Length: 227
Ligand code: DX5
Ligand code: ZN
Image (cartoon, rainbow, N blue to C red; front, side, top):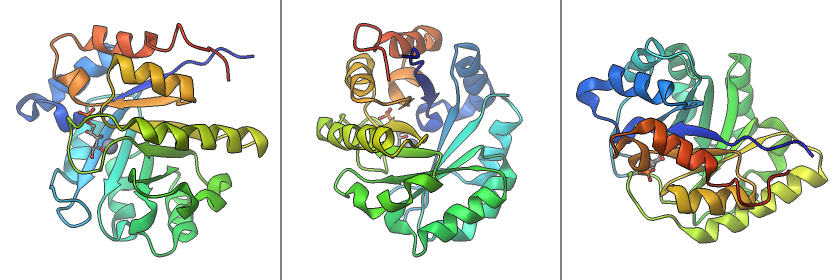
């Protein structure tokens, strides 16, 4: 059994945008594996965040990959812009898209990794026939739209179902979880089979990003450490 190394993806939604360069560099220096960018349009979710200009600015500040989470209506119309801005993977909500395999192909054709997600109340059956076409499945552990919400433990069932499917079908996608992640929920997520933890307020809300990132990475150490 190979040892599992959990990846940490700080979400800049909770960063201080007055000093965004300093914030993302501190996260990278503190050991972050990716920077998570939450894109909200005020239509698919009731909040507006930022667009490709900010993604492209962040790209210039760090060398770790950018994990771009599109919470927007008709994401197919913006794939080119976010890929050009420097996304290393692009995650779409399955229910925001009319033709899912088509969107996956468009993203991949640009050399960008493909991610898919659904909100906590939506089943993975919305996309599970395409699991061989994605690099990443994001399990939302809060409703998309806002940082700082409490973790919804029931979504861990989806994580377990996906780890089983992955093993039985010999697939290789990563499982990411997003929303309400702290040291305690990180341990639960790791135990269920999560590979990548997104965390906004737990990391950027404190004053020591390195120790927050380390505490998330170590959270799973006492649990089963094999895949
Ligand atoms: C919610 C976003 C999350 C959010 C996580 O719509 O997708 O990425 O920033 O924030 P915390 O970690 O504060 O729950
Ligand atoms: Zn997100």
